[in-house]
Length: 298
Image (cartoon, rainbow, N blue to C red; front, side):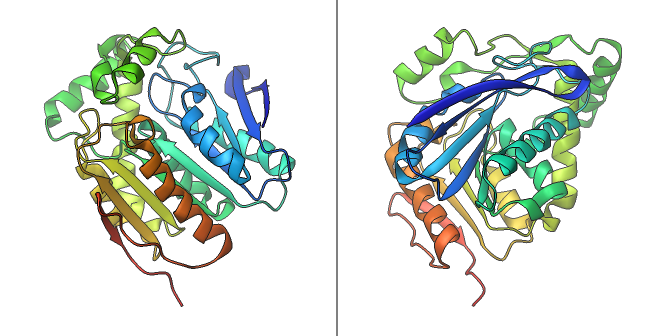
């Protein structure tokens, strides 16, 4: 496995950090990781270590305001800062890996970023895997709260509002401790501007998701405490894809790739990817997960 890293200039000349892990031989496909809120691309080594030996190239960036990239922490001027940066990186990958199928792998906020990206650029991709996608406005957020968030976003955009609960990341204490000890993980509060932009993006997904038509796999922890699991069901039911699959893993928390059962989850993702980049075979549901799927067209 070969590891490479570097920076490129994003919007407003911000330096964006990227890294990739490449197999020793020519890759058969590319996975483009889109990480979640307050974390970074380096937290996906379970995905890297599983898929690179199988012949996949894995690429990732640290979003603006995250990890090793420039920008105020967990802050964006507009949500498109994320998707415009992702488009720049995609174009770089396409130059490096011409004619290879590229699949988005978006987690949490990265699932929301990926969903918006698909609405604008899905014709460039072969499919998407979304993990615990943060695509649904939480039920406990009232219209008044949204109005206040918009107000703070305008008047005090960098005001910290809500922090993530680290214990909700995984049932594995070692994963939680590593998350807390990671200097590239931001454990402070999410800024008002980012919060308002996330809500706006969620509303767009709810309205426009039916326009997403490429193959899509959604994996979701059934006991997710950070993202409403109903969002995964909503997204699955709303997207217009003929080839769409939802797998809900009973008892798992938010980061299904970092749970004790991660080998099962990664194996399911592997089976899905293998069938999409080579054939049109459908794989069966696992006995420990609930799966909803629609058949591929014949």
